[in-house]
Image 1 (cartoon, chains in turn orange, red):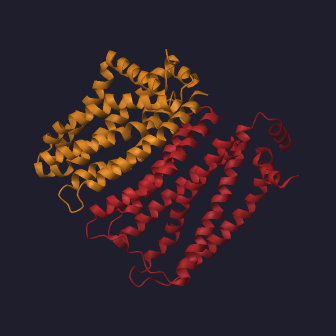
Image 2 (image 1 turned 135 degrees about the horizontal axis):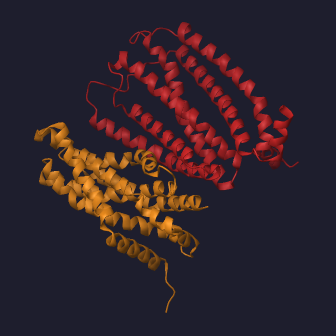
Length: 227
Length: 248
């Protein structure tokens, strides 16, 4: 039998986190319920005029998705931190950044993907047209992994810190600004001369940069937190 | 002593503490003198702007504060890198001492910007690219300080917030350019951020004097803060105990 490689380790981490989440679905479902409720509150606050709602829809959905993803960030590491699994992962002979990437990927599958799937429904609620809904899906597909990646740095830094929930929002939200701007901006750019292409390209660039850099930062943050 | 060791000599808290104590009065004096000169020039020497009248004079504080706010974040990240990579305790303390000063300059820049914006743009706040990124910079400073004060173990607090500062400094240009992009696309025709006045020579000099005044102030206050941090964190070492005994 051959020795397990880095990719096996990655797969094992993803599979483990997915299984754990599936055994306790409430955490996953709560984030989604939050997403739906938060978006629903906007028409109640702003008023039911469909023109206004259509204008703010991309921003509202993006901000709600961002907050929903952020609220579930604590889950990435906290369970493993409490029962000691994380320590074993850091001691093991696989690169920590690969473990981090696996955990972040699982987080994205559990929050990012459902958010993307739910978004057209909420977009329709706010009066977005078919074309705009597709753009919304594209931008969320490119953007939600970035939310999980950048968020993992904040989650690692606030491990076991009191008041971690509010603290993580202070750390992470300012860093979410670029992806929010280009995510919501793409939908609004529909039909303008520039088109959506530059927005999607920049989002892709941010995603590539985050995939390359954040796992290292998160790994370093985990080491600091576990000392 | 070899040359490379000479400058490392002061990287130990024990030797840096008295050095900082000797430097503080000098930087304080420079800061006071430069501020007095800068304010005098700002109020009496610099000519009245033909378009904005006298209300523009606040930019002598505004611009200097805005420069310092960004510069200090970069310096803080620099110290954070040194602290993390070479495990230099003093660097970590310097980074921690810089944060409050940087945050205050950021706040000052926003506040004076609002005061300048009211007569010039007709509103205290506009979603101008520079104002918006300055506001986000303030959030970054607040996040840094919040993380530091939330962690009880001082070493872990320094290292965690150092990492955050590095992540922040990589993100800052991305944030700045995305905010600018966002701003140019959403900008109505009414407000133009490029209304900054063509500067007379006196205005430029005044501004430079104020920048240096703030710079000296920042150095003085950061050194004072790092001295208290050193005492706090090194309170169990022999030299601090001796120092405190000698004072009593």
